[in-house]
Image 1 (cartoon, rainbow, N blue to C red):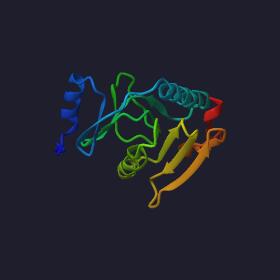
Image 2: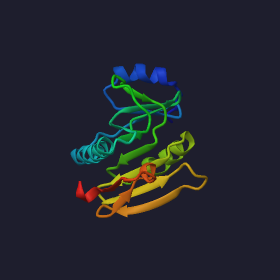
Image 3: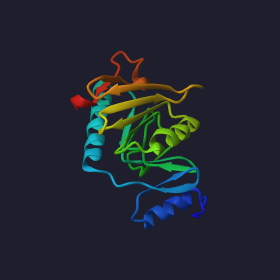
Image 4: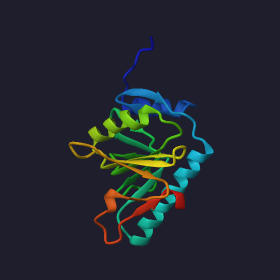
Length: 180
């Protein structure tokens, strides 16, 4: 039986620099990441570009970080496909320090890790909004884990999905994945 060895974020970064396998640190345990398909990467780029254009056009606070590491605490260093923070992030940063406001994961399967394990983790860390985009099913699951009870909404790709962290803005952001 494989033993789970717990490590801290600094040790994770030392290993990351030597490893050829993409990994995350979740609750102190290393987890391998599956390689991204072309469809996965194209979906991430399309969504992140749409969000970036909205932020730039509307001059709202926000930084979009696709494929960027996020050091959420000493025991959790993750690579969300897209993370948006309302904080200012130094342009020379190689890793976001803190908990993003909004995380978007594009999944290539119905892997329970993205749906349940990360939901619990993100909820405990304080992520305000979590999207799971499934190009195979052409659905987006939107979760608001900051509340006592997690609100879940399911959208088809042809539907516009309202973005919770920008809902109070004069020009709130909505994303129709199919239109990207």
